[in-house]
Length: 161
Image 1 (cartoon, rainbow, N blue to C red):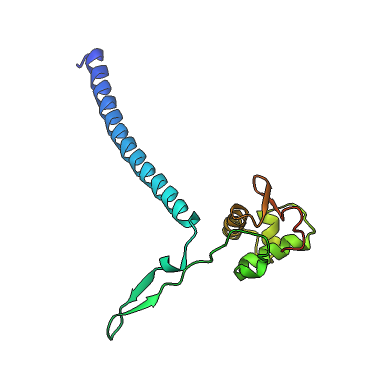
Image 2: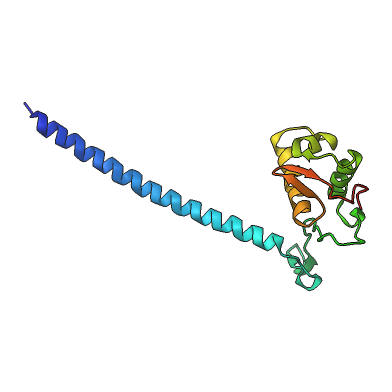
């Protein structure tokens, strides 16, 4: 018959092995998480930098015939707001957001309200799309973020220009 001390020592060894395995998995998960944070920060920095026309990338298109170079289709670039620059210089989606806020006469709105004002279904995917656009507009000076997540046209620009 095994001793109680022997049984406890066996269980302790098994528990220590399990702890070592879990600690190794945790170190691996933390390393993956750290790489993802760095990648996200790098992408955010790159997207925040203004691009000039000579920096425009080109894409190589390989088809049945010879290889040809075509211009890459870039995402909507939101220029920094400056005096004399109107909403018509923005992509249509951004113009619609500006119009929705202008229609409310300077009222502060959150992303769910903006999504509804645009006629979008108020679900997480649509609201997050609106959030990314209004955050970009606020970062470039087109909108004011009154409180976290609450957006309006800056004072003096209630007409949307």
